[in-house]
Image (cartoon, rainbow, N blue to C red; front, side, top):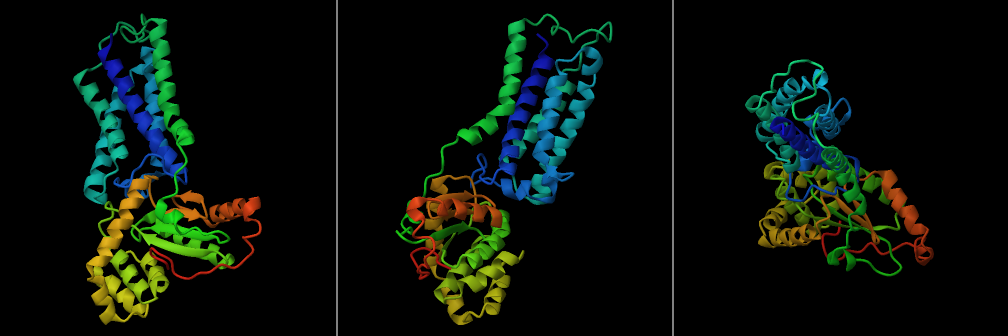
Length: 360
């Protein structure tokens, strides 16, 4: 058995499978693989996460798939495997360095993909291609490979390609958290938003929510803030928001918090001034340990729900997970209106009074 080819194939299958997982998350409004604890968003939605307008994971999947297919080609074509492996390793090492030293955020799936690319180069350097007598020869040991073995490799390649999309399709629907369910009342339509001011998806979604609520004033909004551990600068704006809610200025400050890139405590305090808060009361509230306790409690049940990331939106009982657009919100609203049980309720205006949690 040609150990070099086997290693190449296994590593390319690994890179392909994880690249497909990241591609599915990049194209889906509901992430299926990246957890709350991961820093996937900060990496995949950075300037380094796209190439020529497409997700970098799509290019990675194509590269690993092409490399895998090349391991079955005659020697005339397969002789380029070595140089390709070295290039892949260099790119993998560079992307790992970007995560660790430039972005200072780590996406576990991205690291696995980069590691697979790097190991391709290691295999090439440790196990160079054996000499052949003719460029027409197939790689040693591969010509005599039994049909069932080739079939197994083919099945493995198809599995690596299809596993992530299939899992995302078959993954059970998210269950409504108890804290969200407690807010739903008969004859009313409530949009529950679970967000993080440092989350890029949440910041993109915020304007869509604002426009949706302007179009549908009968929909009440309740906002929960869950600063994710992966976002080191998420706590100061979260505390500030809860302090603003205590003064009835939560929405005014939220607009400023979603718009700023500086989430330091000092700058957030300046935004509190701009939002019209009483700073003496604000300083006392921000220092109140009860705010952190409330944030920790919210984060605990949000993480326990394990829906994949933020933002989470629930329009009545319809889940909208991940970054949303006005079109996706309107689509959920249309589905809700088509329900016979809701037909009589939707046209009414509903109470927008504060409820438990972090009402806006």
